[in-house]
Amino acid sequence: MGKADVNVNIWLSEKKRFANLFNGVIYGGRQVILPEDLEEVNPVSSVSVKNRTGKTKNMKKYRDIIMKWRNQATLVLLANESQDKVHYAMPHKVMLYDGMDYETQIRNNWKNFNDRRKQNKKAGQSLEHLTAGEYLSRFRKKDRLIPIISLVFYYGSEPWDGPVDLYDMFRLEGTKEEKEILEKYLPNYKINLVDAERLEDVEKFSDDLQVILTMLRYRDSKEELKHYIDENKKFFQNVDYETSQAMKAFLNMKQIPSETEQKEEMVDMCKAIQEMYDDGVKDGIQQGIAATIRTCQNLNASRIETFNNVRKEYKLTEEQTEEYLNTYWK
Image 1: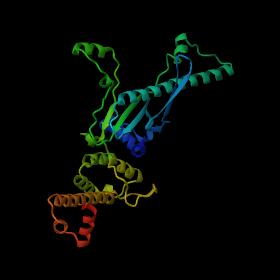
Image 2 (image 1 turned 45 degrees about the horizontal axis):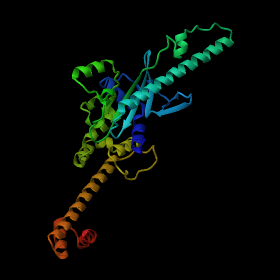
Image 3 (image 1 turned 90 degrees about the vertical axis):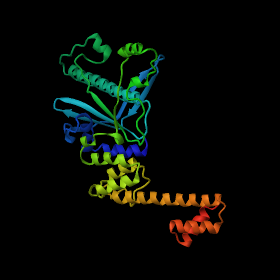
Image 4 (image 1 turned 135 degrees about the vertical axis):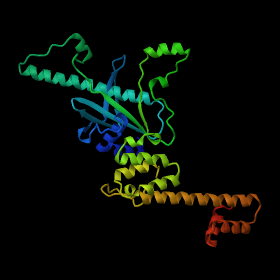
């Protein structure tokens, strides 16, 4: 996992924000999932697989974020995977993660049952009768799994062009009728994709999540981004440390002015965006000067003619002009 994904995951793992994300996606913005009903869950799941020779291979997978949500009598696991690049095997990845989490539940259920069974036997209590099928399955007929809802939070700048379900990963050839027959018996697995920059109904999300998701629409244009930041100056002048680090990842910023590791301090992102904008303008001017010098050389202009052209065009001092010529005159 890259540092950008880590910062985004830390930002999204705040319970109010996490609830906001899932409420927007699942419930259209209705506040059904409440932060106080969320409980963090160990993101590691593992499974042991035996090969034909009897050797055991252990597999471990690490979820980005997973939380337990109790909705009245129903228990649901909510998981999120953050991506800054398109993952072309994402349906398989999510299916594997969900499957391993279900396997962990089955294994834990069976272990808990056996622990209780041992305690009852020790206490001289009657033991629950198990059928051969239950022994074989290591899952009792009355056992139930906690359902898992997984989101893929994609915040890359390019549109998602990867598969959104398992069918997209198959190569099914033949006539339309033949494909339909196969699809009838092939199980599918779809991902719940959140393409953050291209969300059409950002208003479903509330609080800072809505502000940041809207910001992503303008990140390819420094002028539009600066205008949006200025319009929402009250918010961006005083953001928490986690939000500043998420913005750093979203905007691909190298650093934030006066950045510190003091997480309790609030950060002025207006200043950071202004500096990024100024750096972009400066880079553009430098590129223009370099291009002008190359053009003059290609036209066989003398150094003094080039000097006068650059100084007049970009309103530079003699010292600045001489410095650019020393850098770009070949």
